[in-house]
Length: 141
Image (cartoon, rainbow, N blue to C red; front, side, top):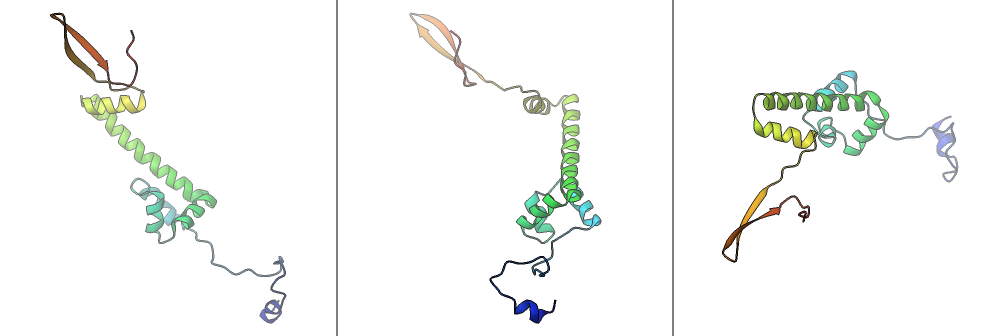
């Protein structure tokens, strides 16, 4: 089909399969760039990754949706980074770092930090200690 024939076709007619469509080519990443995605996933969000590769965020999201090697590389890189940090956190907890142990138990074991606040009150000459719950639950009583 020549351009003259294509251009003279009815502009209101629906596109046919024999008619060529114009537009930008889809963005793709090479295997080397996919490896970069995996390495950078520990440090960059998907939005920052799009900036790194010089494309719009929506383009990078679409690329990840249609190209498994890119989305899997990003997921693998994030998982490795999280695993490395968790490994370090657990090591610190085992070495006696109380803050690391508390953080780990709060985020992974469902522990909750509660504060105990005491208020002194005098009732008919006697001292009574009233404990106020600080975790949002009603006191049993």
